[in-house]
Image 1 (spheres, rainbow, N blue to C red):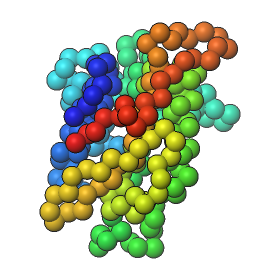
Image 2: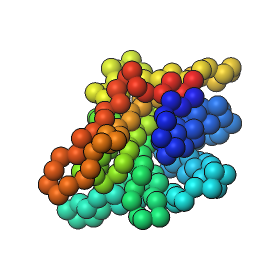
Image 3: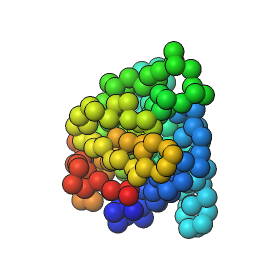
Image 4: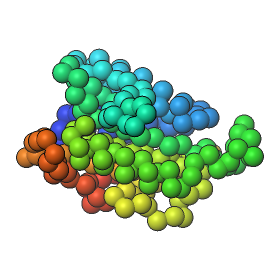
Length: 200
């Protein structure tokens, strides 16, 4: 279960724990399926808790050269501040018969490193309060690789006859004492392996 004490990260990690528990009740084909499923779960949980947040997909968190820099999921408060942004990647099990083999692998290993760096930048610049990256490696194709800096592998329990998905997970949060100031680097907490939730 989640180890977060703040109610907002706790909300997000609670939904990740729900996905772990129900993973094999879903059939995902592409990343968007995962994002859609979690977006709906977050909306349900927000309604259940009576929290004043909205959930958006592909939300512009910061300005870019040509278009806004977006996150796959963003939790936004009533003042318009992004409390949580999350980036997702999904690699289906290569043994599945309903996925064309010529389309595999779907994810490039460097893609996750870029996602982690993007989330860190969002936090450092004060664009978000907390950020996550979640890479679901359904069949363990990338599991032999060392986790990128600031992330760790989490192996979800196996449920027969299914394989056990492996999750490359990272979380970056602003320090409680940090305040945003113009042209001032915001102090952040890089929640490394010892601080990450087990989600098991």
